[in-house]
Image: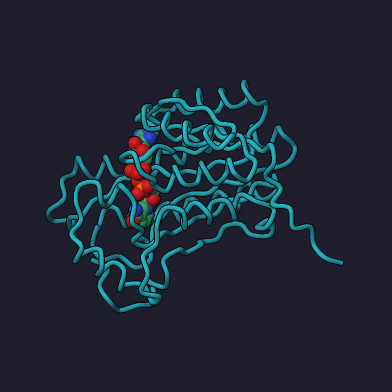
Length: 265
Ligand SMILES: NC(=O)c1ccc[n+]([C@@H]2O[C@H](COP(=O)([O-])OP(=O)(O)OC[C@H]3O[C@@H](n4cnc5c(N)ncnc54)[C@H](O)[C@@H]3O)[C@@H](O)[C@H]2O)c1
């Protein structure tokens, strides 16, 4: 009579792209990697900053989880292919891909340089395209489909400026929906997580005043601060059996910021 409440993640294989962090603390990718491992996945943590990927793996192993790390610039096709091959060579399959890589940009089109436009588009979009290109055939080969989670942002749907970033994150949503259409027939679900202004090392490692932090908090309808664990939990949900009837969707994780007229800093 009741549905099976098993998350279905035991022994699944997950790649977290950008699973390091901007510093020693917990960013969105690191949180997702740790939580996926706690839920039973074997996790391949990839980051341009290999030391940071190693730190994520150390945390997982300390908790008796199964993980390995590899360094790689995932804007390069050959490196993406190598990462996917490593997961197949080591664990024989690939079930979950969390595309977490992203950098921000804060200027208007008038002030932003053409070079930085190219860099933001390259880093925020290309790894999703390339990692998915090599991951999807392996998910199909497994005969059990898979789940791809792309990290966008509420800046895509409710920009606060940050123009090039917002454009790139809007494209992440369109890419997600089109991929969901293409690969639903293969049992592959593709969804987006749209974080609000969560307190992660990416945003505070270069310094954030208490005043700005509290403006960001008050931007939420709940007047609370989100953190990387909130995003990681959304990734686990979208990876799991619990979301088996969900594809092509945006899961907004922002404490209601999208519905608030208060500034988010
Ligand atoms: N923090 C926020 O408030 C917030 C809000 C909305 C969306 N997001 C999104 O969440 C994601 C993660 O954010 P975070 O705050 O945890 O940032 P983070 O900087 O801690 O994590 C991103 C990781 O990606 C890695 N990376 C960058 N370029 C790479 C490349 N070419 N190849 C491989 N790895 C690369 C970085 O080394 C870093 O470890 C991003 O996509 C970001 O846009 C964050």
